[in-house]
Length: 228
Image (cartoon, rainbow, N blue to C red; front, side):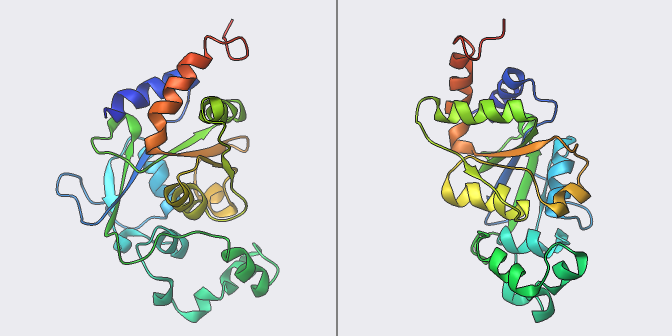
């Protein structure tokens, strides 16, 4: 599958301003892709890839507890109890108290730790590997068309993400469920990424991308989506 060509067509059909990001979980460190220099948050890694970088990262390059935990690079039990309690989020004003944090975290999916060694990131147009998830930042109209294209031949509905971190909602969730996922980001990603207030996020299981691109092309011939 030529994901690079498909990515270009996908971006052209939707007139996407931002480059879609290809994400892949790997059981070993790749030999033909450079390792990220220094540490960054998962959300910043997505931004780096949107801006053209191709790289992989291990747990050593992840500076956010959520980014390491929800992508499966580290076991939550490795973190101190003071972090696992979520008290730092109440101090930041994200939640009122620890019970609210704990209740919220119960709904956040994570990849099983100990399976994967690295995460690979690339602009979709430069991905020389088969991705697992495609992450997109777009406007509401573009997101609507992606969701329509997903439902066009299947009737399938996407999953709406809530206030959880995007390392869970926009990465682990579509990976584990095989469902197109959409959301507005969380307070952390919007603080650390260069995105606009009106931007929304969509993640597509990579196996669905050919079908969605094909559906977008057919939809362009239909009255509801024709660009007159």
